[in-house]
Image (cartoon, rainbow, N blue to C red; front, side):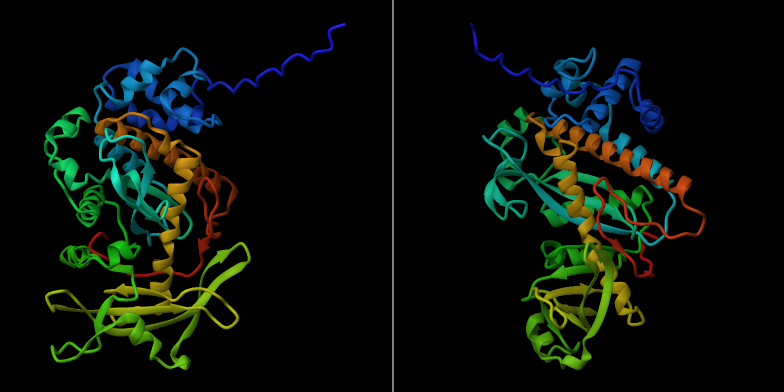
Length: 419
């Protein structure tokens, strides 16, 4: 008698519905105008449905396997040679998101993220540092702009960083379809360009925030000042400040300045709800001047953060150009909204396949990134509609993202040129 067991049957991945989900069809309806033919818009709907599916692998060939009547070639065509303007579609998406209920105190967050790659032919790939893995590796890097209120957040725009070696290599540029008008720009310059795009799209915001890679960059800070953009930026311990405007006042590191302040001057401030209660630390703000490399001085707030009694953690430092009357609690709450963009990076990669694009082309990379933003925005849009149905008028809203994160609870005020 044959006692050998039959091999277990392989589980079949759930298929993407052939008929559009009503809510997704409603969300995508305004975007269909960017496609000249109905079948092209249907490919968009199918691709976004695939990104929203439970399939663990979300590149064109694996998605085609779970999409009825859709081939890998059709999906690749959507990302490369199909006629549509991904930037115009993204502006349309932003306009839809701006129709959501708002607390009127959103901020724009700037950050970059990395995508590890093999080879040297994918657009912008190079051995470079990325904070995503915390080291120099072969990767692509994008600069990203994110909109965040205290209870809701969504992506605004993203752009691939093109290293100098790539920008000067005509052969590689041609193979990767890098547009001729794309030149080398620092990440800070790209961030300012994305800020300009957000303002053109009328994304109103109270201020700009970001990590120390941008806060430590005088060109970025000066660019914000030229645009009259209020900001609260993280800076490193060696950020240079002076306690007076006169040229003879010494320039010092911020860690040296803050450690010399008396303990009783520090205030305990809570800025959000965490899994174990309210996030709280000790803060102090000093009115002083940041000092550029050429000696130019700019007045603002130096903000220090240190662990409270019984707490552990590193000291943190921030720079802001808000006026003297601004409450410290407001600046603290703005500074700590940066978690929203980090959360988006993680969720867009793990849930929506942002890091699974296998093509090499510049346009393909950006088109896939735009469709990931469309997918993420759809989830936020659906949750916003659900909130309106289940919450009474005037009741506070809890934080939301596809994977819920912490909510800031302090009221925030202030305005910038973007508002």
